Every structure is written in structure tokens, then in C-alpha cells.
Amino acid sequence: MKMEEVQHALRHWGEILATTSAGETYELHLGDTSFDFDRRIIRLKTPEAEYLIGGDEVASVTMHYGRRMEAR
Figure 1 (cartoon, one colour):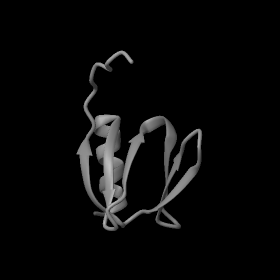
Figure 2 (cartoon, rainbow, N blue to C red):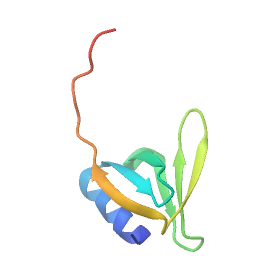
Figure 3 (cartoon, rainbow, N blue to C red):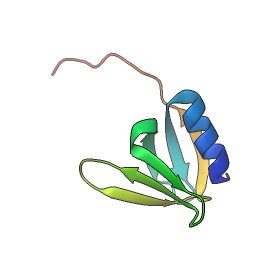
């Protein structure tokens, strides 16, 4: 997929699961994801790390649905 399509899906749904051609899956949110179109990179910032994802390496996008969390 082109990263423009990934950005469009994220803007539409607000939160998505993006799977790369290498099989890695990332949970992307509007507030922690940015797009660098000059370098063709998707940047995901998390509390643990900053991930740089090849912008055109996303193979599929799935809507991430909300759900009730079970008590532990």
C-alpha cells in the first residue's frame, strides 16, 4: 500500500492495525503517529520506543475495534 492510503485509513478510523510486508503488526493512533512523505517513513512514538516504518512497506490495514477489557 502507499503510505497516503495508510494515512487516509488512520484519519478515517482514528486507530488501525498496520501489517508490513515483513509480517510485523503495529497499532497506529492519530495522536502517536506521523507521516514523513519526503523520506517515505511512518513514525510511531510509544512510551517504550520510536518506530520508523517504511512508508510503502505496509501490506494491509485493519480497523482496530474498541472492546471492554477484562479485570485481572
